[in-house]
Structure formats: structure tokens, C-alpha cells
Length: 95
Ligand code: HEC
Image 1 (cartoon, rainbow, N blue to C red):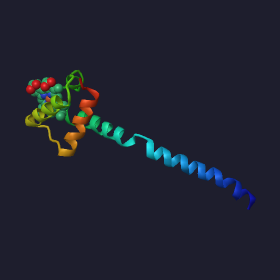
Image 2: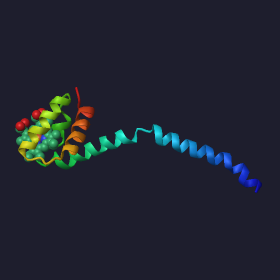
Image 3: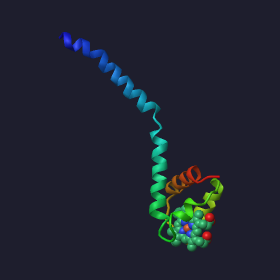
Image 4: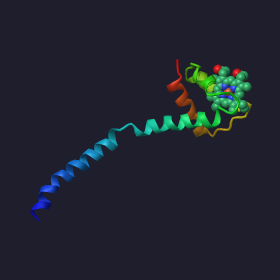
């Protein structure tokens, strides 16, 4: 019984720590970037290498135009995938 009482504060501390990590970690935005990188590797490298893309520097509008142009050449993207990819490109290869 006595042991239980002394363990209680430690448990509360760990729970509070876990909660604050869950609230403040930027997991959502890094997931979006990882998803964008996957899309680049899977959808954009069949006609030319990734280097053609990673060497380029464009602002968000520039990447939007480029991705639309590549879609006319045959790239398949849903609206959600297109915005993830453009977000990733503009963040990683912006100017
Ligand atoms: C169906 C084949 C094909 C696929 C798939 C493709 N591209 Fe391209 N891409 C081309 C061709 C052909 C060129 C060179 C001619 C041109 O620029 O229009 C090119 C050129 C480029 C360039 C250099 C020219 C510029 O506008 O800066 C970039 C950057 C680029 N592609 C990005 C992408 C991205 C991002 C994707 C994925 C969404 C992608 N490409 C997928 C065919 C493709």
C-alpha cells in the first residue's frame, strides 16, 4: 500500500510529460514533408532523375506551375497529393 502512494507522483509526472510532448511536437508538419518526399520519389523520377528537381529553385507559384505542367505530361496526382508535393518542393527547394 505504501509503495503505491510513492509511485503515484511519478506516474503523474510521466503522463504530464507525455501529454506535453504530444501537444508540442511538430509531428504533423514533418509527416507532411515526408509524404511530399515520397511523392517526389515515386511519381516524379520515371522520366528524369530526382536531380532535375532538386537542382531547381522555385517559389511556391513556380512549383505549382511546374507540377501542373508535369501532370500534362502524364503525372497522376490527387488534389491532396498535389498540395503535399508542392508544399514539400516549396519548403525544400524554394528560392
Ligand atoms: C511523363 C514524364 C515526366 C514525369 C513523370 C515528370 N516529368 Fe518533369 N520533365 C519531363 C520532361 C520531358 C522535362 C523536360 C522538358 C520540359 O521542361 O518541359 C521535365 C523537366 C522537369 C523540370 C525542369 C524544367 C523546369 O520547369 O524547371 C522539373 C523541375 C521537373 N521536370 C519536375 C518534375 C516534377 C516535380 C515531377 C513530379 C510531379 C516530374 N517532373 C515528373 C517529364 C516528366
